[in-house]
Image (cartoon, rainbow, N blue to C red; front, side, top):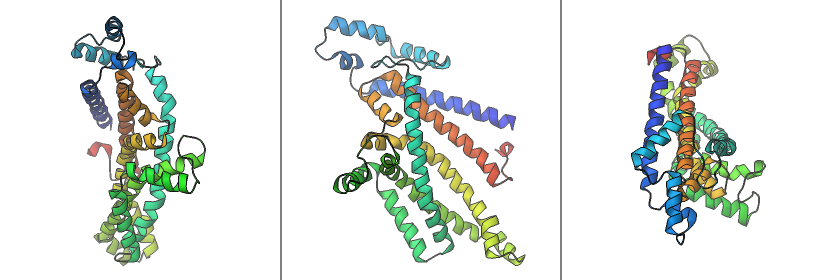
Amino acid sequence: MKKYFLKRMVLSLLSLWAIFTFVSLLIRIIPGDPVVMMLGENAPQANIEKLRKELGLDKPFYIQYLNDLNGLLHGDLKKSWITGRDNLKTILDRYPATIELAIASMIFAILISFPLGILGGFKKNSIWEKGATSISVLGISFPHFALGPILILFFSILIPIFPVSGRGGISHIILPAITLGSGLSAYLTKMVKKSIQNELKKPYVLYAYAKGLTKFQVVKNHVLKNSLIPVVTLMGLQFGILLSGAIITETIFSWPGIGQLLIRSIQSRDYPLAQATILAISFTYIVVTAFVDFIYTLLDPRIKFYDR
């Protein structure tokens, strides 16, 4: 187990380093001078050069990269060039909103996908399976950037039931959660249905019936439990994707999370804040996938850490 955890930690650190390197390079390729954007195009050249030197942008890229990497290794995520505020504090202020939206979206997806997927899995070739398949296709083919405005049009403007934007009570999160969770509910419905159907074909099911177990006992104690393993895998991976998918949804609904923060930092060429935000999202994804590994062992004791 210790060997597994050590290996996982090393791979996680290498992943974060690779992401940091890629982001550092990519964000500097984007057209636009951050200094000119901060001071304005009509600013005196002397002021532009002065600020560029203060920010360290007069140095070659590899020097800037090494300075940023050194700060990261010491736990320093730098300060925002625009606000002058510590990036870690800014992210921590915004993070609860993104986590709240991701959890609400996951709950919505589970409430839709599990009943449909289970009914579709056990009732093959029935109206339930056709309904589950139709919802999966619809959810997968309908992107967030299209669904969000449609929901706003119908349920915030034509029928003013929910707020258009912002974060407040439960009513504020319903439309963003539906927008973000719709794609996940489609994937989960399909996965739950297929997983159950595959388990029902396995020999142990017939053996359980031969031992005299009832259908309820077989489903409860064996089929559902075993079919959840690939579903948990998908849920864990998709939770990390929800965080990145929240970038679009938060922008549409003006939800004050780190997704919206990332868009603004890229638009203003705030390199330190953009790097810190992407690292925060990546770190969360890595932690979630590690947590999924622990869930594996609870669902199936045959899965051990040292087997990997």
